[in-house]
Image (cartoon, rainbow, N blue to C red; front, side, top):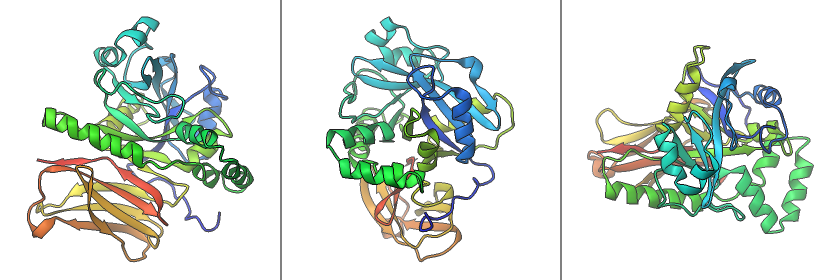
Length: 344
């Protein structure tokens, strides 16, 4: 636990939260109040509750310092999707017929849940519009651990849990590269079909059911959104918008602390830069991807505090058109995933 960088409070103008959380309304272990308490203790400011085939709009808003955003997880014939921004859960007929288009027609957006889960993989890639993809999922990791009979890993996680909840969860995390490759393939196909189509977005999913605890899942990783809360119910809509429009970033907090992560194009258009605030970058490595292909790697000097990781475009010229995102590792293990930005 001492070897892990400390987890500071979130930066001003940023909220830290958990995407995809279940309560006793479906198959979760805890009530909404218990989820909120665990989120607060873990240093989160919001949770996106996504119970199966259930939606409780009356619960949306601030609860004891934690913002509850309501969504619903829908079981379709070709996999699970989380519907964000819908006014109600889908009916059985809607789930079985054309769920992705129904979600869009209701004013919401579909996020593909645990696409490569060994027991419940997603197979409906061409069955309708979807907005986001879970590239990290606790449910997938647990399913793969069980499917591979990795009892030694489970034993180590159980022994670690009393001392470092986040490390215990991350010790079971599966390799996200298959999900990232699928994301890049789907995004490339979408871009070729319609260059004006909005960028799809990435999510790290707690898929928290309360086993072994909500707090363990919440301390392992979080989604960050650049939102300054007002304390009003409208904050839930602002968080939803930031999650869906590509402003969110995924940080595996249990691996190392990082705040205020922003990927942007430089003012002269000849490079990109990743800004972040981290207590220590001594074991960090940053890789820039263009249209799914790695094009640059940076290993910064060890330092503390705010840092900017520069990526100059080829030949010092203006950056070529494409979709750019950054993946960071800490000690060779996944750490930060930015959403892509598009250069026309």
